[in-house]
Figure (tube, rainbow, N blue to C red):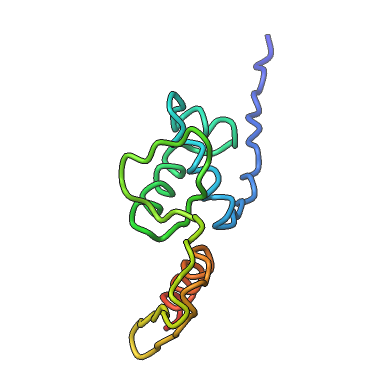
Length: 124
């Protein structure tokens, strides 16, 4: 009898996907709907549940903007994209990070403010 060899085929690593902050926020929002689990949402988007949990932590810490969706229940305060009532015309938002100060009009959307904060924190 002859010995039969065996070959193991290994798949090449899957290319690393990059998710925009907007997409991450929408996916996190899906996990906040009553009766929906993190694992279920992760499977639906072909994600690992631990990555989605990390995004939820970012949202809880105010580093990821989560849009409001119907049926979402927020157990902990998160940075939410929502409309602001008519602001005081003289009011402003000051972003002070290190030696940089950015003054914005009070009517600046929350999503834009969050983007600017993340960009400023990324600067050395």
